[in-house]
Length: 180
Ligand code: FES
Image 1 (tube, rainbow, N blue to C red):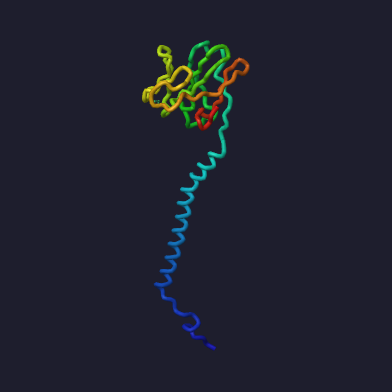
Image 2 (image 1 turned 30 degrees about the vertical axis):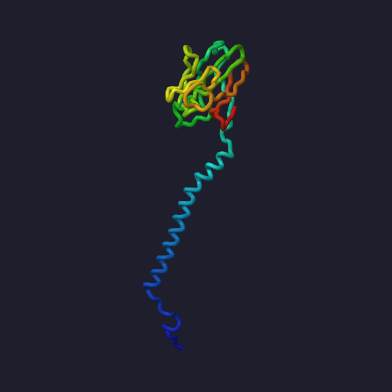
């Protein structure tokens, strides 16, 4: 028995079918784009939160050389290589600190970065002050704040003497976030 084609399959309006398909397609594209945007925004945020929980660069002890390199009573600049240097760091991996050999094995090692905005400070023997060239910050020989905008004294490296060598805890700059 022959069946009537129009009864078994109701006719589909060609424009209606095409509209539905395009709408679905656009919805899917929109969902994918939203997912990509959400991922791109969320990833750095997750990285930021996790990086504060994971200490990937624990400080390491680094030698500044024999104690005899530092004259008693004198302030001397010392440069050391960041133990966590990366290839792109170039000269910025060379970190500077100021070493004060107070007497004998008594040392104080200061980070060279000003506690205002981080410019490198210099020691001036004549005035017995560390001076910052950027905004006129000044610090006494013991690192305490003397004048200018810096909110506090210089940060101090933890140090120790091992086999006649002066070592500092390197790898992170000493700040209030990483008190050493
Ligand atoms: S950075 Fe040293 S005073 Fe501003």
